[in-house]
Length: 460
Ligand code: PMP
Image 1 (tube, rainbow, N blue to C red):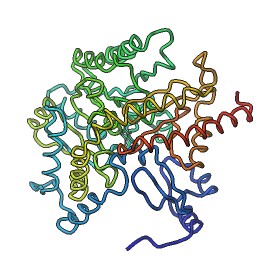
Image 2 (image 1 turned 90 degrees about the vertical axis):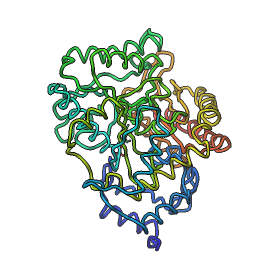
Image 3 (image 1 turned 45 degrees about the vertical axis):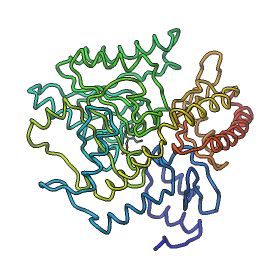
Image 4 (image 1 turned 135 degrees about the vertical axis):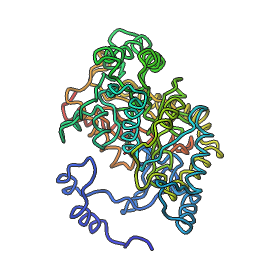
C-alpha cells in the first residue's frame, strides 16, 4: 500500500495545516511550501514535480549506504513478520539484537565490547550523560558530575544533548543549559588560529580544555565530550595535534573522554570511526545515523572496558527506552553494517572516492573569490564563504550569505547545507567518481551564480 497520490499543492497544503517541522520557522515555510520528496535511488532523490536531485548531504549525514538498498527493506519485512517488537528490559533478549551486538564488537577496535541501544543520536548522548555520572557515583566520586562540551558543538535536541551542545540559539529557548554543563571554544584555526600554525593551534585549543578542567576543579569534572569533526557546527576539522593532546589532558586529570560519532561513525572519514582517523581512544562513543544508514531510527552508545566494568559492577542502571534494541531496527542495522563491510565501501572512501573528492573539492572551490578554508576528510567536506580572503575576514552577519548560497544549490537540484557561512557536504558513501564530477560540476555553476548575486546585492 503506497501513500495516497496527491498533487504537490495538496501535499503542501496538508503539510502546512498539520505538520510542525524541526528547526523550522513554520510561518515562513508555510508561505513558501515544503519541497515534497517522493523517491530515491543511490545518491539521488526525486521530488513530487519529477526533479532529480543530487543528495550531497546523505539525508541528514546518515544515508551512508545510499538509497534503495533492497537488502534492508527485505530484512525489515522478514523481521516484522517474525518478531516486530519485544523489549529487552526484563531478562529477555532476541536474536536480532544479539547478532547486531556481536557484529558491532567485530567492526569496532578491540576494547569496545559493550553497547547500549537508543533510537537516535540525541538519546545516545543523553544516555551517555547519565551513564558517565552513574559511573562516577559507582566509583565513589560523587562530585564528578560536570561535562565539558564545546561552543558550536552539536549533540542533539533533547534537554541533555542541547545543553551539552554549544549552539547558543538553542540555549536561548527553554532555559538551557541545565546545570553541570560547561563549554570551551571550538578548535577552529581559521577564526581563532591567528599567527599560529595549525599544529601549534591544535595544542593551544586542547589547552583550553585543561584550563576549563582546572577552573571547575578536576574532582568535579566527569567527562569531556566532542565530535571528532564538528558537523553541524560547520565541519570544523581540528588540527592533527588536537585530539592526542585532549586525550593526554583527560588522562592527566582522570576525566572521561567521550567521542560523539553520530556523524563521523560508520565510515564518514574513511575509517569506521572518527577517533581512528585522529588516533585517540575515547572511553565511550555515541553513534546513530550511519548505524542503520537512516533506514530506521537506531542509536548506540559504545562503552569501553573501564566504564563497562564499572557499570556492570554498579548494579541496576535505571535507564532505557521501550525501543532500546528494537528488533526491526537492529536487523536493518546488522545488514547495513554487513554491506558496508563486505562491499568494501569504507575502504573505498579511504583509498579511492575520499581522496578523489578531496582533490576535486579543492580544485573546484579554491578558485572562487569569496571562498576560503576549503577542507575535508574522506567524504565530509566544507568551505567557508568569506568577505576578504587576504585578511581571513568573515561576513559580518554570519549565516546570511550561507543561506543565500544554499538556496542556489537547492534550486539547482543539488543539496548541500549551510552551517552559518560554512557550506558543507557529506554525500552517501557509495558515491562514484563520475557522480562526484557531476555534483561538483553543478556546484561550480551555482557558485558562479552566487558570486554574481553577491556583487549585485552590494554585499561585497
Ligand atoms: N550528535 C551529533 C554529532 C549529531 O550530528 C547529531 C545529529 N545531527 C546528534 C548528536 C543528534 O542525533 P539525532 O538527530 O539522531 O537525535
